[in-house]
Image 1: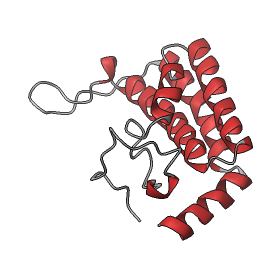
Image 2 (image 1 turned 120 degrees about the horizontal axis):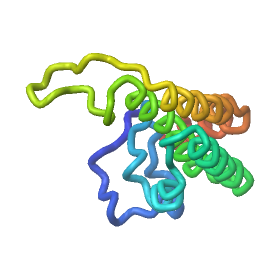
Image 3 (image 1 turned 180 degrees about the vertical axis):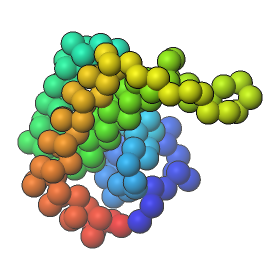
Length: 148
């Protein structure tokens, strides 16, 4: 079932109402689903490889903590933030300032920022660990079967 953007995200606590959560595709809902967004977002950084390492390790540890608490929605949100760390660092690798399009809507020329590429690789590793975690995959399947 697709991610439901029609929900009142300002008033829903998905820890209290996990049945309303849909996994969706990729990073859908990563900046909407509370209280997870507020818990994880302050730790999400990728400016340098050192910062990316600390950030990805912290978010992955949160993934494991949510797993310990049998909190699938938290695990999935942590996974999404790790994925977003990779995709945003890649965007900054390819486009200075992270902007793909110029003021006229044309795609800018691609560049290669090796520092941001390293940050992306760091997030990629933690994202792979999260998305292939066997308990996560089992809980994801159960959540989707039960709630859509």
